[in-house]
Image 1: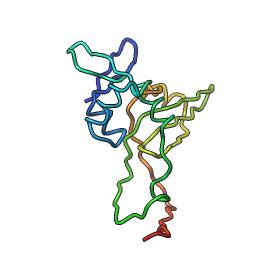
Image 2: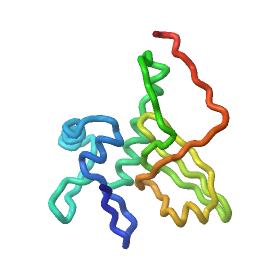
Image 3: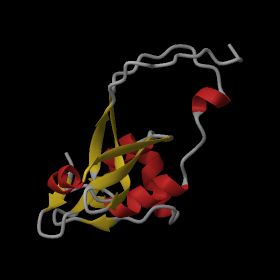
Length: 144
């Protein structure tokens, strides 16, 4: 469960939540905190948490390349709902460009500013990208 303080709209992620978004173990996140690679705070209940904006920044700066291009895929089945963290929102008077980091993948969506405002989209917010496409290309990597 993600904890959000509504007064400041600041999202905090517990260690297990950050680990799931980073696609690493809880212990790895703890080691990164201990080594200073990630910054953690303590919530009102005394638990270690990572501020959403800090996690978004970390994920953007440390995004790995596309693993499908680096290693063979032995099998995968993905749904079209991709959980990630908002890393950037650019608004004008009518539209908004929202960028998310989903594991090593950057997802960009264009939507109305009104929709982005209603959803409270800001860097550090947990979100789900739902992808609908009539044209999806499936490729087999050269290394099998």
